[in-house]
Each structure stands twice: as C-alpha cells, then as structure tokens.
Length: 113
Length: 111
Image 1 (cartoon, chains in turn purple, green):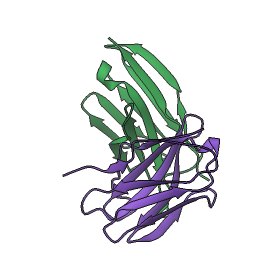
Image 2 (spheres, each protein chain N blue to C red):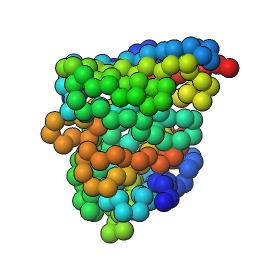
Image 3 (cartoon, rainbow over the protein chains, first blue to last red):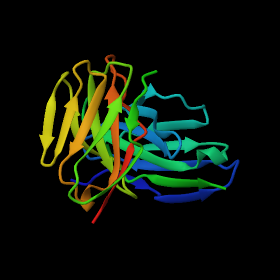
Image 4 (cartoon, rainbow over the protein chains, first blue to last red):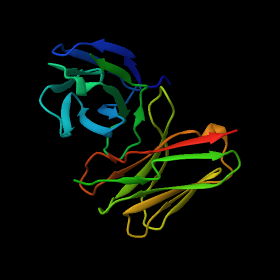
C-alpha cells in the first residue's frame, strides 16, 4: 500500500506570494491533517479535513486555508507569504476517527525569501 | 491549551549506552503517542499508550505512561546509530481534539 505523498517536496517563494501544497492520503483514508514544523515552534496543528469538511482547526491566521476533494486528496494554501512561514509542512492521513493512527508524509519544505 | 514539554532537548551518546527521555505536562491526556522522525521524513508512530501506569515494550524501547496520565518516558537500552532521530511525544485530550506535539528530543547515537 502506497504511503502518504506530498508535492512538491521543496519550494522557494518570495514574500507576498501565495503557495499551494498537495497531499495524497493512503488509499481508504478519509481524514487528512496538516501540520507546520519549525525549529522554534515544533510541530503545530493547522487543520484537519474529513469527508471534504474541516473537522478541526489550529490557531493559525486566515492566510492558511485548506480543502479536501471527494477522492480525499487535500490541498493547503498560504496567501501573502511571510518570512516566518518558512517551515516543513507535513500532511498526515488516517482512516476516519480522531484516535486512529495517523501516517505522515515526507513533507514539503517551504522557504520564503 | 494543553502543552507538552520534553527533556532533554538534545542528547548525544555512544553506541551501547542506555538513555531515557521524558515528556511532561500539567494536563491530563486520554492517550499519548511517541514518534521518531528522521531527517527528510515525516514522523513515524512508535507506540500509543492509553492507560495510566501502562508500560509497553518495543524491542529495545520501553515506554511508560504516568499513573496520572500527565507524563511519559521512553527508555532505550543499548542504543544503536539507527536510533538517531527526533523523538516526539504527542498527547490527545478527552474531547476528540487532535494530538498536541511536544518540541522533541534530538538524539544522536555515535558509533
């Protein structure tokens, strides 16, 4: 069974631009969560989508948004990029319940110049 | 907001040594997970503990959940270079919230 895939793996943008990251979950998994990982703040929860609906949301500004498609694939978008948005963005999928084991993808390394 | 602290932040040891890393909080968690993350990869789940006082063993790794479900420890016996990585603990609250992650312990095992 293929794991969680994320594209692109690396991305360089400049301040003010916007970016879209993509995540394909493990086949059969209906929940996709997004996390931001930085050296200073660690791994922080952004949001979770289940059956195309946002089920949980972390404490991030509205510049961070996401969506999920009917095939469970998910995208997250960051608008008006700031230097502090430079981070590893991780996607994790799980079957359906909050307590189910989640499997992480390799992440997208975003650098904002 | 439930916060997790991990100690030590960094640990560098020689192959064959034993070590323990800690995960602490002032909050009670319904369950707690330990992950290992290697460079360029996402975290990989090692174990989930759900009962206060629970001890789980995974080969050379021993995980313990505190009686009050506020803390946990990970003990590695006879560490090997392959154990090198970032060890993260993550706790889940009682009301269906997603897991909150600690800042991690970065372990380096030297051959």
